[in-house]
Each structure stands twice: as structure tokens, then as C-alpha cells.
Image (cartoon, rainbow, N blue to C red):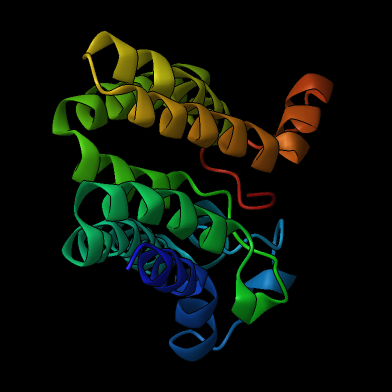
Length: 196
């Protein structure tokens, strides 16, 4: 059942809500707009708040659903395995030739099912950094790096700390282009509509 939990989580994570929303509801291929990323930030910047919100809800929701299904199939171990694989699916979607998003929204879905306390603190960190800096990407990077530390602070089991480290590394890696733009001063701030 562990293998089934991993497989279903990967497939569910691969569902590209940003691409599907923009393509079939707004008639736009989001992979050819802005940064080409399928995440909520790029969808919002290029299509507006409603498609951006739909994308975010879908990406958070699939993270939650994958963990829930994993728990039904194989208990806590299944939920933990699903947490890893739903994020991998979102980052490397089988439906988009193994391209995908930056995993932040899906990570929040995983965190909601793991620990509400951790989720609230990590979200607060993301929101605070984003509002102060006006960089969505910087908020995402900082909140991602904080995940294992917040999990440790709240006393989560070691297996979840490993999950937190994995999420932190993945978020950092998936934002490598944003990091380059932040360093060069060319990253878009909130309100601009180019790179996501």
C-alpha cells in the first residue's frame, strides 16, 4: 500500500492546475506567458486574481488530498510518503514532460495535513517577508527554509523533520532562477506582471 500511496500522490501532484485553469478556462497557455511557470504567482500576474486563486486552491488542495489518501492506504507512513511524492509530482509533472511548479502552494497543502501550528507559523513568515520586501519569491524561499526549524520547534518526529528538510531544499532549488534575479535586482515585486 505504501507504493500505491506514493504512485497516487505523484499522479495527483502532477495535475497542473495552473496550466489547466489558464488553458481551458481562459484560453491561454501559461507556460508561454511570463516566467512560463504553472504556479499561482505567474497565473495571477498574467491572467489576474481569479485564475490565480483557482490555481492556488487547486495546488493546495491536491497536497492535502494526497496526504489524506496516503493515510487511508497506509496510515501515518502512507501520509508521510505521499507528502514527498505529491511535491515531486508538482515539481516534475508527468503531464508536462516532467516540468512543473515551484511547490510552495502544494507544500502548504502538505503542511496543513501535517501540523496546523507549523502551517500557521510558516504562512506568517511567508506573508511577513513578502509584504515587507514586496517579493513573493523571497517570502517563498524564506518560509521554505524555515519549515524544518519550525517543525523542530514544535517537536515533530524526526521523520517529519526529514520531510521539512526535503521541502526546504526543493523550494530553494525550484526558486534558483528567482534567486539569480533577486541578486541582480531584476526580480519583479508585487504588482508587476512579468516573471513568476
